[in-house]
Amino acid sequence: MKQRHSRVHRMAAALAFASVALLMTAGARVAHAGTDADLRGGYYFDTDAFAFGGGLLTNVAGSQTLFFNPNLEAAFGDHVTTVTVNGDLHYDLPMASRMAWWVGAGPALVISDPDNASSNSNFAVNVFGGVGGRGGSVRPFAQFKAIVSDNSETALMGGIRF
Image 1 (tube, rainbow, N blue to C red):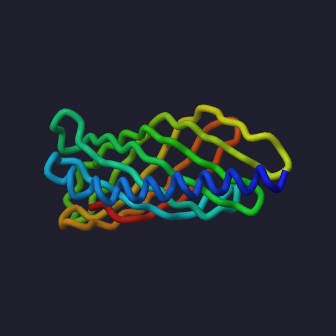
Image 2 (cartoon, one colour):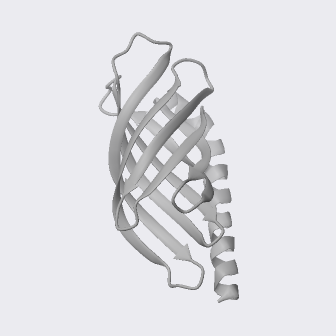
């Protein structure tokens, strides 16, 4: 069992490294296409796990308020490794503020690999809200989300968009 657990952690670390490398190179290329990359980190409360990941952010059909934000997060707890692949959409609230405030939802694939048990995957729905910087080439953001599934989860994530 220990060997399988090490293999999963190595695979998750390699996936995370590849994602970060891809996002770092994509950031320069996609900026001209109206798409931003993000790097994120945070905490998954229900599994007591620290998480990191990355994503892309692009407006939908030229909209200034509706955005597609596909992303990947890997959470490493003491007794479970969780990877989520998310297809999030978010709506920027019309507020006169230097900060952007949003709400959103989207489908997710949640892959859980607990110690002493078989890994499993299931589909879920993300529901979230967030706040972030509006201007500049590097913008911080934070968001709270609930992952609604057979094994629901809550998470607080923060990061930068570039």
